[in-house]
Image 1 (cartoon, rainbow, N blue to C red):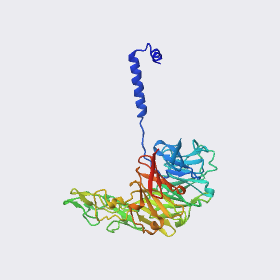
Image 2: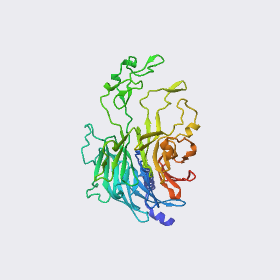
Image 3: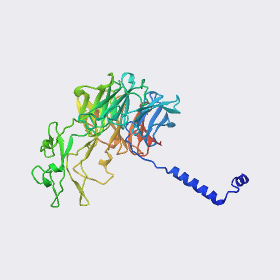
Image 4: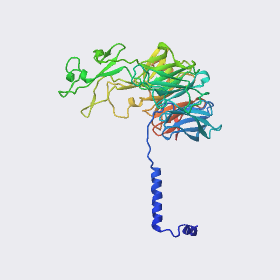
Length: 485
């Protein structure tokens, strides 16, 4: 072998060999350090189980792939990776061999066909939809229709978005007949349902597929601002900015006034009217109800077609399969209140009651928000971490799952790296007591969603911070494995 190596390089100057070696090393280094743009697209439905319960599907958002795992008693076995569009954020299984993936950045949906053993897969169709699609469910007759949320705009929109026209909804739900996608390159939707809200995010479907719920993402909370030009100078005159207006005797700068709409008029925190200064109103429509069996599907007429007062930022939804109530994970901003928090190191702070993490229960009886951290004493701030109050808290609830008997709700607390476990009856009646005993700690950070394998007493959770999967024993409420993707 040594003789052959000498013959191979015989006659080549040593300097040339060194140059070739360095070029190869630099080229390899460049390839390994190729630039990568991280978009941090929000995952909405990152996991799905095959109908037969044998396969787990996971969106690998940063790598633009669908990961397929075989479910075994001892854990998960990775079978294959299927390249899809850019930034996949939601997945739904139509059958054991057909999986649909929503690509947030590509404005598309990839229809993936898997081999019978799940060890290989191919994108067999790409559907082009509106801007920034986020979620997907199957509903309608035989659950043969795919519902996909998207913004009312985008390069694929077959309509004029009318950006400057008042009264036009900015939320769309694209509906495709899964058995008849059309002959056009990007597919032909059965219909596009436009809803009067900002960009939509989450979807949920009733067990019989008859109703689909669609939620606005940044749905708002009926608050606005009055520009400082319309507020009396310096905030000192009658009708000015609510106090305090000075710092160490020095008048503060001119600022706007925060106001909230009560259905007829705009008031500030002192209950003073500013209606003549706010020249518009917006309906607070947060969650919409669609008739998935109609041909074509449409929003229900009248007040039965929407819910108001659900929350400021709506993340995900889940339907109780027994009583039909809808749970909406959300945060509520208290942005109509001016405050200055307790001093830290002799300086003012922003420690206070700014935001609430909630689950809102929707039913024919109305809208019932539930503050997940009602144990917090906002009048006392703030003990050094860690402390008992903080350990009981759940921050930024995202994905949810309900057991088949409708008795238990699991909530992914993205900001706390935990899963909250609640009796649904306690959530609905607001009788739950926050406790670490009803929480599941995860080794990976930022859980975004989960699916239940009730027969095996397992729950699979995707943790966004480390792009991994956690396996949880639901009987012991403990994480038993953690797998990077």
